[in-house]
Image 1 (cartoon, chains in turn red, brown):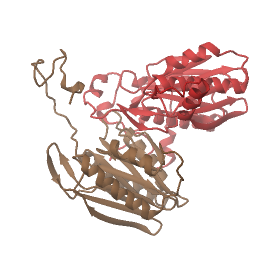
Image 2 (tube, each protein chain N blue to C red):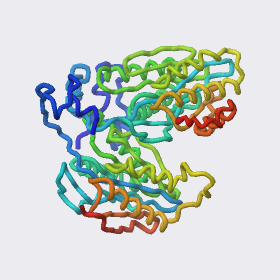
Image 3 (spheres, each protein chain N blue to C red):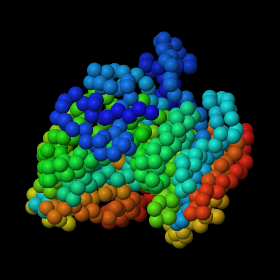
Image 4 (cartoon, each protein chain N blue to C red):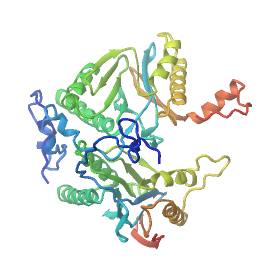
Length: 268
Length: 237
């Protein structure tokens, strides 16, 4: 069983040392199958075998900056075709104490690429005795994803620092902004956010706004749903709010608006 | 069944209209059926699978269990394409031995799960067509279940069903073990005997409604004393 180093498939030489291999004799790298050796020139080969199963997709994630830091919120549903593969996925993952990343696209791709990114950031910190900036992290991620452009790797991550939001996707986009929403439910989330977002919100209002945006998106988008995860990142680090089930929120909202008594039963 | 696959590109139904010349390519995958289930309790874990190996309308074997013992505290259940299941288990066994020789200790369930995730993702562009579920005990002795998708995305659960009848079994498990969609019910912790009985009942139901599930049920119960195996007959039709 031969193992080849993952970085051999990258064409540029910005990484001279392959120290992860020398560190131990347990193989840690990815085995890149031979039909995949140079993905940019063989993109057509990589899609020649049709997959007999659907992969998990579909989500609503959002992030925005306000005076009190950055809020990152996401739903927790992973769908594969028409089936809810998992109702309790973690779409927001901390990379280190001051950086949180929201993922959307294919579940496995996001999970593994976040893991790779965390490893590279940690190695950078150990080698250079300082943390890589969020802009550097975004550029590193973008460069690592570049060889897979044109294949069906589908990754759209929003890196949320305490003063910056950067969106990186596997198509090659790398954008800094004040507000991002990604995924199939993002149009609905944008609608709610654009209405009420302002710089001067206080922390509770911002959290409520993020929660409301995800709730409305899960209501209208079939591929988003279940719970909402919320992270608040400040200069002191990230803090996670307890995961909340939106099913209860729907009934609370209906009762508040006096619509619950109607016999018209609306399904989520 | 009226699904999109029955319609050709011109919008006409493939079985009743000529929709144009169709090209048949060799597919390296086959679907061999089978269902796997895992449940984690306070100090035990159960991994169960049926033992039918089918392909198309035929049954290749009635005694092909899909639970594979990895270590004394971990069992892997894999269903999907049998060829990939066999290769994957061989690779995992080899990696377990390598770990044991380099680190002088057995891999823990969590470590096996993380390793399996990278093994599956290394074949991102020609995936193993296998639905994996790992059941075992974690370092604290509590039951752990890790469920995977074919390309390596995984997470720790309390219970999970995978394979051909997974869409039928998972809602039943959500209700009986997760107490979902029920009002005013006391959340009783699951005992080992109740869990084993539940698994048997659930597989009997699956065998009724899923053609690829049946013949016999193999249950592996993982506790700190070791792994106990039980075989229960299911419908053979």
